[in-house]
Length: 313
Length: 245
Image (cartoon, helix red, strand yellow):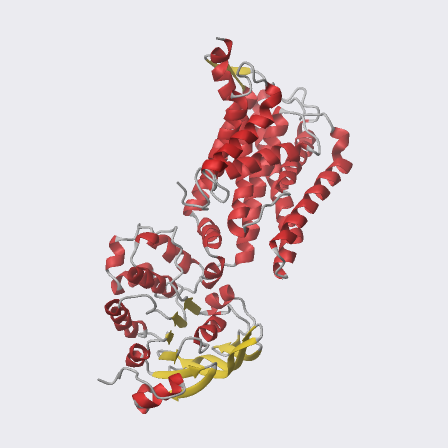
């Protein structure tokens, strides 16, 4: 059968998309862990990372023609770093402006949500005004993203897929170790579990929250670069990717780091594998994704791995 | 600074929770190397007082000084860095973490000093073999001991212990109290808040009794009879176990 024959290719597509969902989902889950806040503006952190890295990469390679192949990995690292720095800066500022001010005044949860939505619109519209002359453009073609590097059964693995999946896996392992083994990671887990007691143990809660936003922002910003490498984007790219990534975080268990990674990959795989089944059709992709989410939540209301930051599963 | 000089001084503290005034005009001072007990019945305001010393509540009036520095407005984490650690009521360990991680969190943000995980193990040898265990799997008494260890590794000048006997078997409480004098070796001050008066009086050098947020008695346990403390504790005579026998 044609569908069965194509499964390896769909899996590859699913892992590629899922890696990006997972990177963005981690930001939702980290912030939820320490603040029990749904940071709806996180989608715009991702979008900012895409534009920030676009501008830097464009400045480095121009239109990309004639970039020597030895320089390509370097440009990719520059792109990842500039995306991460942009994302981290936007997330840090967001926390300072939109959330910390409310926290100081003991505002109710609802006020944070409205502030988040407002910040999301603001960032998206601002990017539209500043950058939409880039609309429809992907990144400069400084390397042949679609060159096939290997073939696994029917799956033709292209360069950009290798870059995305590999980078995402490295960053996720790095984050997992950071949270499990470093002083900052323990502070984040302590604040997530019991903030007043964390303060009694000498942890500066505001600083820990700030750093949590920075980590989540860096991951999302780097994901923005990866997305831009593969697809074209505009100032509204955050909404679609962000909503899916948020769904992935909930799917895995919001607040749970490994849950966000798993939820992201799973959602990517479902989106890639289910719609092409004969008689379904890819126009049903979003419907399939959210039906799966709702089904999981009916049977496991706290998501697949449950709500718990840190030492998960 | 000489031993015997007050380290922590609370001067005329008044603490309100909304409309309710939990603590009225209470003063106390604790010296290095001293074990000081604040006793009182449920609702006397002793936990509120202790949490205010640690920075979890802001007093509406009065000042708190640590080694001469006014710390009344400092946040709890800044106080830890200056040398005040609270073992909170109900232990409040990070249950998703191991014993090791709890001690690492406690030690990471405190002061440098002689209290390390190894020194805690000398005091509580069982802990060494269960270092990698998640604290959720420990018994209540073991958790209480880890909570004390977690505060000790921050090397406090003043260790605040809030109701460490709560919810524990009497034999376990007795064993924990027996270790307290060992903490006083250097110049650390220990301030315990306790409902179990007899237990606290056995170990304390000085004490203060609170009733409805006011100080009703203070001094050395040997200065008063059980009946006098009873009267201060309840506001009228009743039966309190004697601590002198």
